[in-house]
Amino acid sequence: MEYQISQYSTTAVEIDIDLPMSRRIRKHPSPIELIGLLFTLRRRCNRFQVLENGERQLVEEQEASKVPLCDHQFPVEIFNGDDNSLFQYLCCSFENYEPKIDAEVVATALIEQWIGIRDQLNSRSCHKVFSMTVNLTITDVVVQYVIGEDGSSFGGEDFRAVPACDKALKKMLKRLEVRDEDERICIICLDEVRKKKNGRCGLEMPCLHVFHGKCIENWLKNSHCCPICRFQMPISSGFGEDF
Image (cartoon, rainbow, N blue to C red; front, side, top):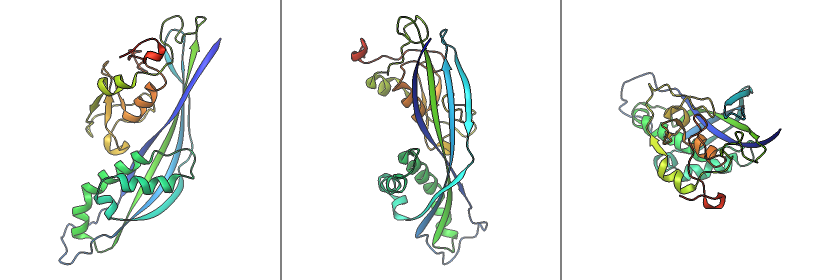
């Protein structure tokens, strides 16, 4: 029996903050000038096997302990604009770390968090430096497909592990605003699909299954089938079809 392997990584972000206890607005507050970020990292590995009948099984789940990663102080101005400046700073900060950390996801989550609390902090703060703990989780997803005698995955059916068409991803995936009270689980990384936790909204496939945006985009770069129901997205002309 032959197997085909596809794998990729996703980055999830969780931010811990301590807001000032006092609700009193100070007459002479000290505007925050620097934001200190303490990064921690946790590594996970979810290994799946797709059997000949198309059934998808979680065969192994590993998780390492959370460890300190690095700490930096950044000028507050880069949090008040777009996320490109912060993205560039984080790219430089993370460039020597393995596994690769998705700096775009981290920057987006941090700016969303800061915009939500900056007015409250600036009116009550007596310190010029505000600190946040940023907990990063890197999930390595490994999918093992059984290859049939005809060279296709999932037995004799045409569920080959080939990527979906890029145009189809842009047109057919629907961005879904996930509310805090929703209790959806992304079957790819096994984390909750919650915007505040992961720094991104969910994406809904035409079959109505919802995943983290980064998770399903990476999945469909390897396989054009929904990981839950095997709904087939269009594949590029290089594989015999077009969109």
